[in-house]
Figure 1 (spheres, one colour):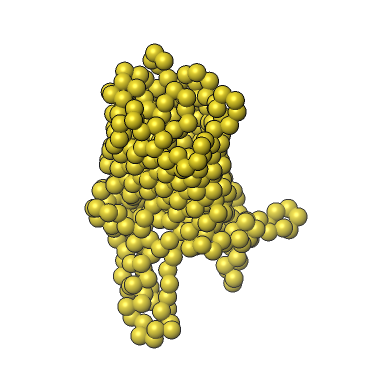
Figure 2: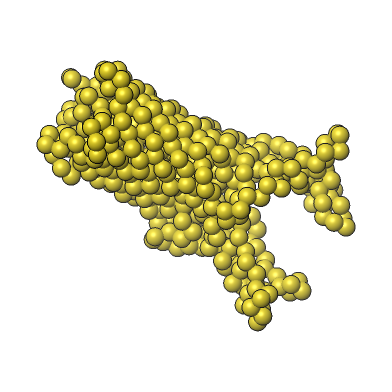
Amino acid sequence: MLLFFICTGAGVFAQGCVAVRAMGGINPLSATGYTLPKGHFQIGTNYRYFHSFRHYVGTEEQTQRQHTGGGFDANGNEKGNAVNIYSHAIDLSISYGISDRFQVNLVIPYVHNERSQVLATKKDPATGQTLEGTRYSVYAQGLADIRMSANYWVFDPATHQNGNLMVGLGVKLNTGSHSKTDDAIALDPTTKQVITQNQTMDQAIQPGDGGIGISVEMQGFKQIYKRIYAFGTGYYLFNPRESNGTFKSAPTVVKDANGNVLGTLTGYNVYASPDQYFVRAGFMTAVGKNRNVTLSAAGRFEGIPAYDAFGGQVAYRRPGYVVAVEPGVSYRNGKHSVSLFVPFNLVRNRIQSAADKANQNLQNSVITDESQKVHVQGDAAFADYSINVSYYYRIGKS
C-alpha cells in the first residue's frame, strides 16, 4: 500500500531557503501488501520541522554569520546576523484505490513559519561595521499548495510481490498565499529611527509559490536478499509560471568598479515560481517476529534548479540543493502505521541563480582583463536536519 508521505513537508524548502514540496513513499514489507486495494481508503497526517541557520555560498559555509555582523551585546561580545528560519508543516492526506494497481491521492498542507533576522540600526561610517543591531521575527502561516496525484503500478502486484515500479502524475495548485505580510521593523530613511512597517514576507517563509505545477514521479523496489529490499524514488515538479508577481525589492542597479551605472536588472526584483526535484534511494528491512517494524537507510538529493524546464527565467529565486543521509523507522499494527524519518544534511550548495549570472555578465561586459572579472553568487540558509513524523490509517476490509 501507499504507506508514507515522508518527503520534505509542505510549503517550504530543502531544510532552509530552497523551496521544495512533499511527495510519497512505499513500504513493500507490509504484511497487508504494498498496494492500496480497490475500494480502500487511506487517511493520514505528516508533521515536519526544521531550523535553518547555516549560510552557504556554493558549498562554502559563511561561518562568520553566526558571530559577526549583528552588533555587540551588553558585554561587548559581537553577535551574529544569520537569518534563522523555524518551519512547522502538517500534511493531511487521503488516498483511494480505484483498482489494485491504480490510486488517487489528495494532500492538504498547512504551514507555520518564522523568520528571525537582524536590522542594523547603527553602523561605523568609516568601516561600515554594524555597531548596533536588533534581532526580530516575522511570521507567515496558513494553507499551503494543495496537491492531487494519481499513481499506477506498472506490473501486476498479484504476481510481483518481490519488486515493482510505480509511476505517478499530479498537479500542484496555487492555493497557498505567496504574498503574506507581517509587521517588521525598519529604519526611517529620513530620521534613521526604528519604525514598524507592514511588509511582504520573504519567499523562504511564504506558504505557497504562486504557480500551478505538474509533477511526475517514479517509485520502485526490489528484494535483494530475504528481508532486505532496495528502493528508489524520483520526483520533479514543473512550474511553468515565470514569476508570481510578488515584489521583493527595488530593481538592482549594477555599477562598475568606478561607480558608473552599467544597467538595471528589471524583473529579478519579483519572486519566481520555481521547479523542484527530489531523489531518494536506499535499503529497508523488516525486523521482529511479526515483521511489524521496518528499518531503512537512504540517501536524499533535493532542491530547486537555477532555471525552469519550461517558462521564463527572469525572476528571483534561491536555487540550490542538499545531499542527506536519512535513517528511518516505521511500525505497523493492523490498519495503523506510524513512521519517523530524520534526514541529516551532508552537502549544502547554494548554486548561482539567473539573477546572479545576469549581474555578473553585466559587470564583466566592460572588463577586458580576464583576471579582473567578477563572480556573483548569493547565499542561502540551510538546516542540519529535519524531523518527519507520520501516522496513517487504512479504511477497508482486510
